[in-house]
Image (cartoon, rainbow, N blue to C red; front, side, top):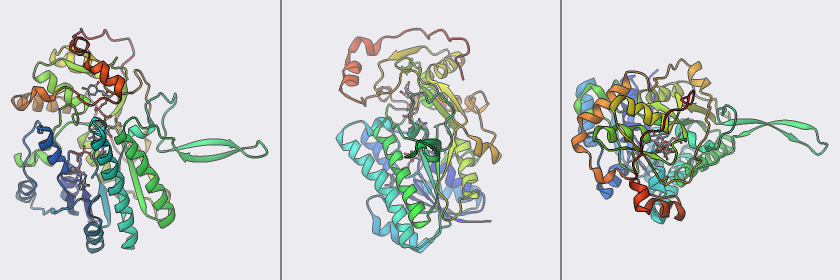
Length: 416
Ligand code: NAD
Ligand code: USQ
């Protein structure tokens, strides 16, 4: 059944293809975005690897390609509460998909301005959404893009469940009582901390006001194109590769395309969860179709296809492209080596057969990296944000930062 859906942050990397997909399914979609992501690019002197059209051209091209209309509202959901609340009250959407946050961990660690902006923007925007829904007395399903990083990366030693942890707590008589609690968060950056804070806002408003919320704990998204963005050149999705917004696999592919050594932070023993952009879009569709009931606790789903170590990822890219590998001082305060096992039982149960790095779409992402290699600004490759003063000092040591080494020989059974 067709729904009215607001896509907050619908001009971004995940939001744009999601808005197209939801529109293609016959929903009435409105994008709400303040184009802050494009503004940050301009401030950094950076640009998407792929040429992206203005939002007006994107929307007219979508109408031309599909016959469908997506409406657009320019709005800062964190800074302009009165207009945001009025929009919610006027539109009365069935669902709101919330992508509209500052999503780069390195950008959030740049300095005091970026730390404060990230907290104000992300927590403020999420809270404004909750308040606006309650004030409008609207029974609307919120689907929020959270992150795997709220769980932390310090090796739980067991499969991370979907959001909640079953624990036994001794009562006054020392009898063990069963409880289920939010999985304790251990955020690794100011950005990841805002996602942990979002969780508490959702828990509160679901309990107090019956707001229906699904929080998707998503892994690192790779790839560029989806079925819908391939329909017209002006629908092309963005592709970040620079040191702040570029995520690890997309960066490695661009580095390979321009003959730059792959920049492994530290030992490369960090294990992370990954998902292709096509599956992000599909998961949001599945989440909207399977809302919690009013009064239910927040529904938390892990949105990840597979887990890999960073150095295994580098080895994979190196095998395919012949790229050399460079172990650079890690700008981040994070575990050098960690295990990561995550349950994605709910999405699999709903019929998701996730795309894996070994699938054909890896070749498409590599092809896009090569096609637009002449748009790469090499000065934007280096990661600049350091997590603390000692990481900054290690990064600034000139000869370590430029030392090139051969790829580490792979350890049998290490790839996950
Ligand atoms: P993005 O930066 O490309 O898109 C975010 C969009 O939100 C941008 O278009 C930006 O202009 C808009 N926005 C930000 N603040 C806003 C505000 N106050 N008002 C209105 N619009 C605002 O990021 P993305 O990669 O598409 O990520 C989208 C969401 O998914 C984020 O919340 C992110 O934390 C989450 N996520 C992303 C990844 C990933 O690998 N990209 C992985 C896990 C989770
Ligand atoms: N890394 C490298 N070399 C690089 C870039 C990154 O070794 O050139 C390492 C990082 O040190 C880190 C890992 O790769 O250990 C992942 O870094 P990333 O930048 O790809 O991803 P991250 O900062 O975790 O953030 C991204 C998105 C964020 C999302 C998150 C999902 O930017 O919005 O929430 O992935 S997750 O990691 O599962 O929390």
